[in-house]
Image (tube, rainbow, N blue to C red; front, side):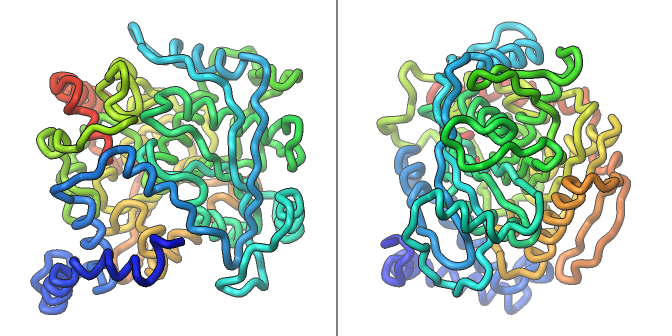
Length: 482
């Protein structure tokens, strides 16, 4: 694609050369505060991304979204089959979401009812024997899927939800991490193109991922795949995809709490049982849309996500999709729902009955919220693995793919998924992976977060109130850059 051509890359990097030279010099001479933790390549990569995100001339939301949706193409050692999962004619999937919203909420919650629509997705698998830059074979999507299934070596199915702050990116941007997971697990990934904000606010994305999960359990008309048992499915996601993985899990748990046995949902003329999946595997999950936790500021030096402030984001110019008409204060949701467990899973109090969950995160701005959710789950008897990668930034394994820590992180991610699908016992543990050496230090997972439920609730409410006080035109800029 044009944006990734050598000329385009040169145009992008040329104005940054003085900055890169200063960064390299500071690192080499040991003046950088992160030079003892990062190698030079990591320092240049992370600080370049931070510099680009921390622009004095922010793009409109529509431009950010449009650029993030450019398809890089399909090449190399991956199979990709593009599919569309048919929308059910019944309203039962939406009714289930609506009941869960009301059942988990308090007071009035404002949200628009989204239409139930077909869900686009990509089946992604590993293509052994292909050259690094091999072209995608010219054949039908059904034939692409047949080739993919020919090379699948295990019964692992990963329902993948991509990151992008709930308003950016799609499965095309996440083909590489999906293909890595497919290779390491021997399985396949179904990567979902859920509807993006601000055009499609909460609960549209949640409805889409629920439709996708039920479509795995009970294939709709025209689907290429056969039914997949819940015991062979793992939810996985990074950043905002981690948010959707957690809220989909919380939605299922709520359906189970209110049902007499395993709940069922009417779907394409069938009553489909909706069990809990085998596991959930998260990479830097975004669990708190209020941005209340201390690591949002204390971990800034290790992350590329810049410091947020109301004044900075007031500068984002208006465009055709933002502000919305009528206006609301957040890109993703009405402010009345921001503290809801199906929007900010940090607010969820009850995780009992959950499948095993793995968290991976760096020393990043989202660390505290991931630790708080992980510790709360573990205290309630959920098998939890929590992996902290010392001094690493947000979704570091996707940003620094050649880093030895990134390779190790993918191995841990895949091993957990394999264990969950195999039904092996997963013991709760927290592991700190040291920078540089990658030595592992075991910690007690129930103690990794110092904050009580009451303290978290108080911090979330305080941050929410501050955002609310900004009024329309200010708060949304904060969320837009997370």
